[in-house]
Length: 296
Image 1 (tube, helix red, strand yellow):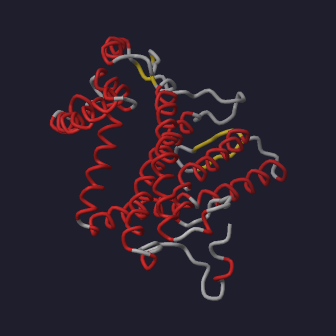
Image 2: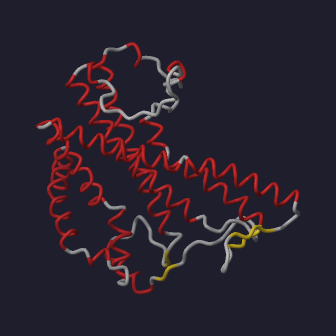
């Protein structure tokens, strides 16, 4: 137990050193003309060091927010604003998906064309099956990038047996515990899986989560880009690596919003019931539609 506590505080202390070194030596990981820089990104993106840099930033901002509530409210509003902005933008992919499906039906059934061509000069031409399979990407974008937006808007389904019956501060304690015990660990697990899942479909030799930095730097000698372009059908959608990118973005946004939700819950715990939903930017259906808003 003592060893675990020491390990934790050592990593928290080293997070400041690691962050400072990364900021002062950007060429070691940003100069992708150097193959070793790519491998450093692969390794440290899924490393304990990177986790503790992010987690230590969370601890520092939490401490500053306890000292000055305005700092914490600013962080909450920034992260919730980020979730809302991304969600409201990506939600239009649902409309694009419907319109594209209508075009596919018309082109295939009425005009009996096997392909769709877009653009002038150098046109974008793909088989009907490519466009049909590409619809999955829009659906994945909505699921992955609108998840935190839906959380901010209170749109996720909730099975409530206890929560609604308890007092305001008890609810906030439950929310804080949920952020730390469920949201953050889940996001970290998905990130760890998705990070290496992504890179194994972008480069060769394929990196492994068990590879140390020295082994990855040795592999860098033979590194080359090998972006996955294999579809499920001969002429089908061939950009499936984009789904792996979305998985990583999904995990990152969940972790960031877990931080925002913890901070909001802590602030509402300290400031009392009158602070519930303070600064919360939720969409509205308009006047007279209140009965339909906030239902799950």
